[in-house]
Image (tube, rainbow, N blue to C red):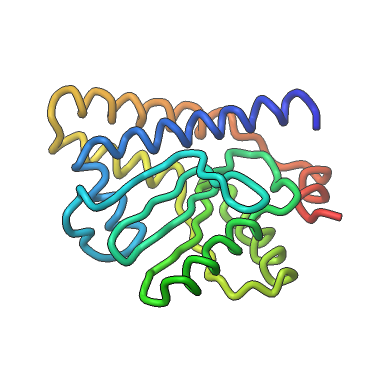
Length: 192
């Protein structure tokens, strides 16, 4: 792996931790959960958000767990999938569904909106090859920024400042620094 790829992964990790920390704002957490699970989340004290959750053969960027619900968010900015991604997260989702059939377990890719087609197609190919029957969902970094922007309008002044700073960060980083994927990136994303 080259130095630039290593630096990108670290930025993705940092952004994931930052996004997870935003859930300390109840307003943001409620809106994010509503977007992910398409329902009212109920009592927010029953939800946990964990960055960097160890799973078999990897580390999930963000895991969200609550009453009858579980989600893994795999964050990407412009780095290709590493070996085993996202099938290792799909296995974790499948395991949770088998252990708790009543649970709504979801796998999300969190990517820049301009790269959704690339990541979605690449992930679907990998999931199809793995024969894992897990639905793939997409959410963009820009959507999380919009949730933060709307939440800031109803948040405390301290929370609003933090949420607004996140919006600015995402708009500047995702809007300006995401480069088009090269042919080499596409080949790498397909795996061996």
